[in-house]
Length: 99
Image 1 (cartoon, rainbow, N blue to C red):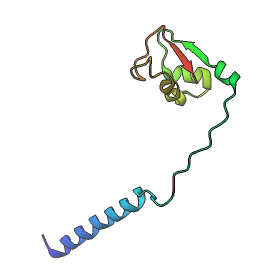
Image 2: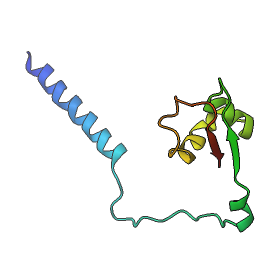
Image 3: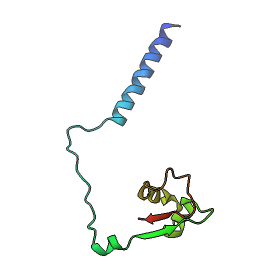
Image 4: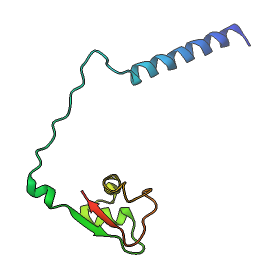
């Protein structure tokens, strides 16, 4: 391999590493700040909604029914990890909490 090619390879790899370090670096000097949590009222806790899964339903269709946006299916899955083994397996008759 010619010396020019070796030099180009070394410079290219160095550039990729430099970009990765800048892009993925964490600012260690700044202390972590917690995001403000919304105040939860007592009536909000008691007003949790539930949905009983029917045959053929998916988390996507349930999210679209309750939120109007099927992309929020993962919110339902996270709230029901204790009864669901995965977001793909949705047994009929299971009662899901809708956050």
